[in-house]
Image (cartoon, rainbow, N blue to C red; front, side, top):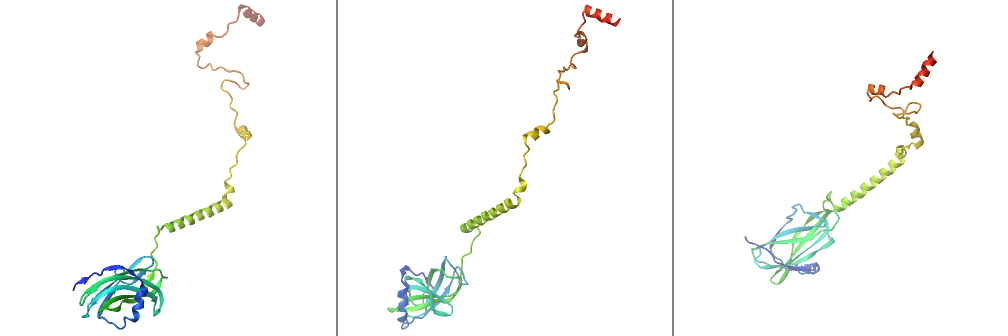
Length: 242
């Protein structure tokens, strides 16, 4: 069996499709539809992302038809009359001849509160010049928010603000309770000078008189350099001894 790909022309208002609901009841067409979510087989719809459903249409009727468009709506579970949002319609221009199979993709965006909702997708056909509406998908979907990453820019900015606030609180507590214990006491210059020991100069004695270091001079030089008494002084010394 050959599967054809429908030709998408341009979007068309979904209001026009829903207005045809009163006229499509008179015309019928034997078309088998199988719908699936290729990105998520469990029907999980993620907010803010493109969600797609692919419908496989098989014309089991003897009458040739053509695909006009696809539209949809989101309602409350168990109450088809409570329409939360009418999904945008897409216009197609693709033949659906007898015994042929066509894959029909339909994509939409979700902006709902997380939870269980009902999704209905309509496929509008034209057979023998009469409009025919069939249900491409009718079932419950699970709406969820996208997973947040730890490296998200907004989260990183929030982490930075929280870290700065925590550091500020810790600094205030530290200064309030432990700031005074780290004050250093500086000694005055007078007390520092008084504590320093007095160092005596190496070339003066205790009385402050000059002292020459003669340890390096040979002994015979010291004897020769000793002052000699004059004869007159020597004579006076001997007479005083008598």
